[in-house]
Length: 502
Image 1: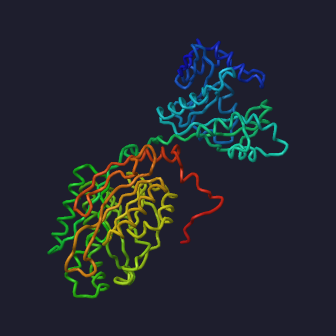
Image 2: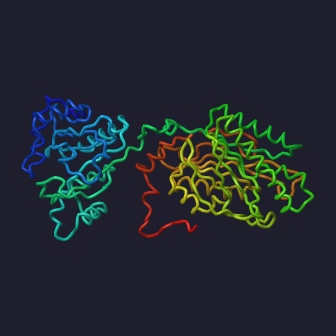
Image 3: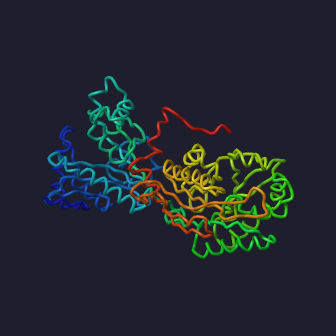
């Protein structure tokens, strides 16, 4: 048996007519006329797909392109096809509309319908269309219409309590029900003239104004920062600039510094109590952020500034900044303060949990201890986060292990990339900053498209270095829709919820 998926031609009409008549035997054997098929082939030839078994056409999928906003969800089959003339076909439209799909009953069981749907999806991606939409029959509904509403029937089919030969097949091919239509196809007694408006979303769709960057791999640069004393601010800036210049030279889209990486600048205040010394250091934060902002523009790289102490209304915060290469600056304040930070520095936790839009996707920032609280990253994930940046500072391997394993869990459970960067080495002459341990890394979800250990890359432990890593955001979309498991989509939101209180 030879099975071929190809574009339909007018010479296939006789086979198409016979197969369609057999497929719709229960509806009176309705068949598209030869003139209609000829017109459709002239309007949109690549959209008319068929499967030939031993050179005989036994399955077919017909479609047009429409500007969906012109019709909306409350349309009928007659309206969307232009009174069956296909005058609604619009090459500049954004939606591939399925007007027909059928398989000859003698050839069912060969998964020919699945092949047609896959070919349609490939066409949708190739033409850069937003989605595939179609009105789907629910031929099993007539057996349950006395006891179930269409919505109840659809829910039972989705939950596999009932089987519908059309809807079950569509759901298994990654379509979802967008709406229930009434009077969609007059004469469809099996469906009681109801229909499901089904949709498949093209995750690769790029709108006319979308940045091409979003379809590319994103390059991350992580700085594993060696703690060292600096004689003055200029020397500190030289070291910062060195890393930014180097990472920029590799074409990175982001560079991240660690948490409190500027604490060597505490050395002149070592005679003061830790709380007062940290407040003195906070006086330099505005200047450092301004310099980082300048570097982000001149080196064309988005900079996550690590974190620095910040005074605001008499309270001390642990703050990180995102200096966009477009000129914008965003701020995140550490939410969860460690016992050490409370004891020595009297720090206060922030209360803003929001994802930042960048020219390379949606990103979130959590500082060290924050990543040990799964609620925060899940709130980010619900806002569309694709990359989570975690600047951290840990003194012992125990502390590092907590951060590392929690960060890796966040990547898996939220279907995102997580990048962590920390400080290394020893720092004399600064109280409460004696030792540091780090191994910076980029973690991934755990599925076939990613490394088997869910680690994209990791630095040499406790050694100053840079980590340059490429991540592919398209893989996250594929995971979300087609992954072996889908943690975001499979949550039982009917049973529990997570929400911000402020």
